[in-house]
Image 1: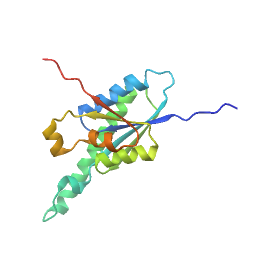
Image 2: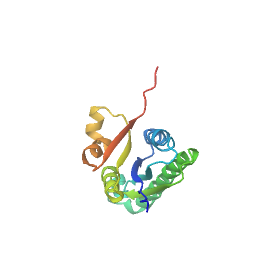
Image 3: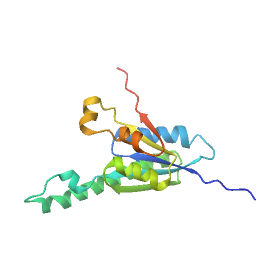
Length: 161
């Protein structure tokens, strides 16, 4: 009896940036849609910031602000997911899993790798310089060092002047 091999899992981190969209498009064009029978199961993961990490204060008026911020974060998550699904649909990729997980992107993506036993994690690079990366932190840098799988960082080409 022939043994059916299970597809490997590819986790793609998505967010509301052009860098993320480019990374997803590049991945689909080069690693998914070019094969007649893709070897990867695609899992798209969006790390939704928590309300408390976004607002960063608690005090008078917080009770009125928190629901508004939460609604805005949910709206952003929906827009990001819809755009990612549209990118996949345009390339005839239908077999995808989409997850929205609240938390810091670094931890959410590394946890998704573990949860799905991913073979590869794909991330877009925002192209931060050393100072900005030191202040803001780099999700791709963190994941490259902490994810327990191959990490591919897709860089958007610089525009020529």
